[in-house]
Amino acid sequence: MRCWIFLLLLGGVGVPRWCDQLLGVTASAVQPGATDASALVRMHWSQAAHAGDSLLSPALAAPNEDLTFAQLFSAAPVDCVSVSHGFLDYCHLIQHIQPYYSIPLLVLWVLLLLWLLNDTAEVYFVPPLRYWSARLRLSPCLAGATLVAVGNGAPDLVMTALAPTTLESLHIVICDTVCILCVAGGAVVYLRARAQLETKDPRSMSEVEPLNGSTYVAGAAWLGLALAYLLGLLVSSQINLGAALVMPTMYIGFMVTLSYLDNGAPFEVEPVMGPAPMLPGLAPPKEGGVGETIWWALTMPTYVLRWMLVPPSDFYWDRTRRIFASASPVALLVFALWSSGAGFRWFVTSSWSMAFAVLAIALSTVLLLCSEDGHLPRLYPLTTLLAKVSSVLLLLAIARELTVCFKTVCLFLGVSRFVLESTVVPWGNSLGDLVTAVAMVRQGQSEAAATALFAAPLFNVLVSAGLTLILTTSHGQVIALEDAMGQLKAGAVAIVACVVLLGALNFEKQVGWLGTFSLAGLYLLFMASVVVSELRGSALA
Image 1 (spheres, one colour):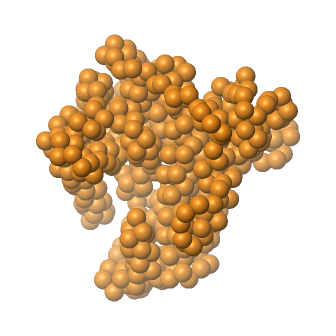
Image 2 (image 1 turned 90 degrees about the vertical axis):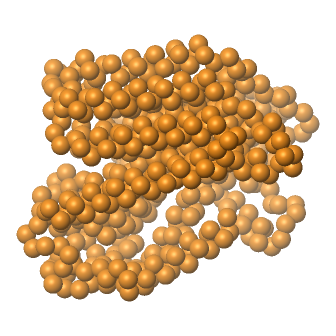
Image 3 (image 1 turned 180 degrees about the horizontal axis):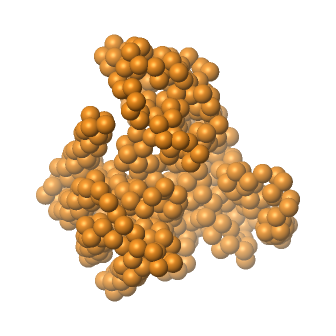
């Protein structure tokens, strides 16, 4: 891991100069009179933008003027207000800081966000999932198909609903499916293959948790059927309300099938014994060098803030857990208001927000004053439900921050909206699926992870896209889809990825590392096809 961080840091410092020498970025690549890629990106970022307008400065838009990579980043947009930003305003950061310094800073920030995403999934997302799976007596497969899939499908549902056109919303859903199957699925196959190699027994496969093949095979079959139905809609070029209603109905059929086939034992939580341990990240390491102590000191504030948002769900209850649990309702309300962009004026004038504030304060007071250390309070199920919701919201916020950062960098590079919706947007939407799958495999929940690999994209295709189509056609309108060749190609890749992942999981003893390489190679081919399509479109323009 440290080696990868070093290489990324080295790449962040050296990429600008390397691109100056090898790429030779020039503004003359934009032909006079043509709609440049940055204008297309601006149309996606701001609905008030006019077709053909350039978001970049006149120096960048002028033809026949050679610009290096550094000058490309220093030639800032005229107005950064039209560019959405997250916790940081990346547009102004790139605009006012020299590129040789802004790029390494962005690389460090991205590494921090990736660590936060992975650590939040493993420490904060999985414990409430285990609690509610045990309380509802769900098997690992049903938990992966319901709690995990719905939680990870939230960003896809939002991005699908906010897409400018129906065709683009379907394109985002299909590309998300390809990314989940290839990237998250490849990670799961890799971890299970590595677990076999790390065991000392040559017959190590018997020591690795076996997968319930009937459930994820059923998920793969339903996903293939859903993708085939979606491709059929694209071929027909017309979608009405009846065709859209079929999609959520198919998801209900998947859930019924899964509940019928699943015969796994429900989650069982071992009874806690002994004194409550310290929450992760709050105590300094007892053993370790100076580096680990410094890392703990730097990351400890992030753990404190996250424990305030996500109350502990480890079946222990002491003074520390009581304080954090009592602070979480108010902290979650403040976080939701801040992340949604709602101002203070809206908060004090909205009756709904004031009602939620009163409920949050009342719940915090009850948890703080009406509970005893060493005994779980009666409201403990409510705190774990709050932990489940807040952990999903926190993962969405971190994934959104990463997506906005990548989008802003692509905006300065003049990347088109088609490339963004094929690469950057699916990456951001699929990060939650990736980190939760990895976290579940590491904690011995491979069955839930394998089922979620097919259930999450199935939720995106049938529920996210289905609801979008239902809302569009609810007034009797018929959606006419034209020039859907790119979506058809992406859908074909998604079906192939579904088959490859199914084979890698079903024959993992025989396949081993080949499954990971096959999925990675398939996604690289998909990325190459996106680049080729973009270059052909630019040449025709």
